[in-house]
Length: 273
Ligand SMILES: [Zn+2]
Image (cartoon, rainbow, N blue to C red; front, side):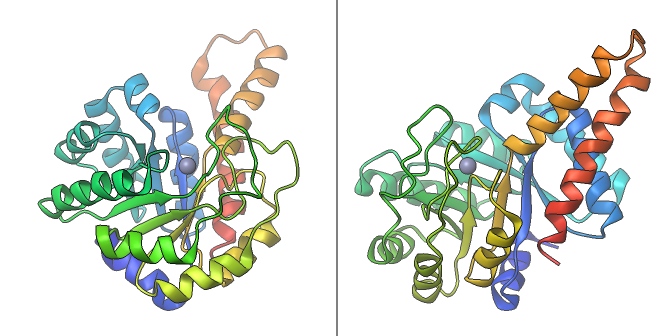
């Protein structure tokens, strides 16, 4: 299924899809086996730094082959693309979806950048995600109570850019939380009502209570981005395994860490059932 059709489905059914970041073959395997076992579809995300680490063509070939091998309904998405050049490289390499993040630019420049990516993506029939409002990036101040996306700006932004999906700032931040975040459910509902045809995306979902994620979905969120928790569980597991063994056969050492990624991913996929 084309991701645009999947998006349409999610909006109609008031449901969401998990969008999980992978970093290497092992995290990719963990995520896809979770989706396969729980019979869920999944968006697999790569950030600019993961693309740089794996290599663009290797990443795309690996993801596409693994999706096929696991028999999962999954799409490859560029997370937080920051330039038209990067977006174009990803589209040419075969990505199924892209994000352009102009959220740190003034409104008009964000509109201009996002609109040009939407125009470019038309040639590939691929959906585009934009971002509006302040969602703290790693290392940035997590002042999650301020700078929530406004209804008026969201409406204007979608009208001017025609994005298919919009990441909104409603109280989340990237990375682990220093303080318990309070999600602005009212704002989610209001934006949902103002934008009945746009997929609404919750970034920074790592560490958000599962009850709150479910509530966010019921208020209109359609895409749940989770990265930090997968990276964390993989590395923490690996560290503890390595501390308890001298086995140098990585094919025997990695599977337990992969399995922990899988079990965590299953709990996230359960939220969209
Ligand atoms: Zn994000």
